[in-house]
Length: 252
Image (tube, rainbow, N blue to C red):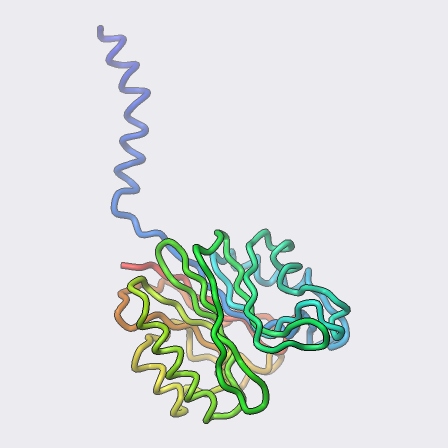
């Protein structure tokens, strides 16, 4: 009987210890946002280097990535699907959001994720110089928004109103990331801050080689309590004209 008890203890106790250690633990989420300029670096604008950009992304081990400036099968990019090439190179799942039809294909934004979204869709956003878009991916425990806003302040402010209204439709935590083309003190960014909490650092992201402007951000919906153990601008001066931004998020 004693031998049976000891055997039972050896088999069961490790499982009990594991359960006790994980009980109540919060699952971290690693978030990256990166304007990749179609994987064309500052060293040679005409040369596409998917492997280099994929390496920058993979080095941060993200769970979700917001990407901006992506061609899908355009003449400019020789018919290549930049998002899907990055998805293959990083081992992630790619979801594309078209902003405009372009040169026989499309141009827009994308989301890379470790798991397949429950659903995804994109909404048109205003842009005087060109139409913009908001890409939405819903996952089990959160929603991820990706965007690349207009160069004009009027269009950005109108986009902020649309994005804020879309966020209000979800009961889950919502993350918003992208290239906003706006400095923190602008009116449109103040509109965002009514509904969102910034979790990326206030550090310059553009231009990548000598950054002097803060125009890339990661936000979380205002009604969400999070811990952010780490956030940073990734020190990558060459793979694109923007530097990536990263945030490690724990939902409470």
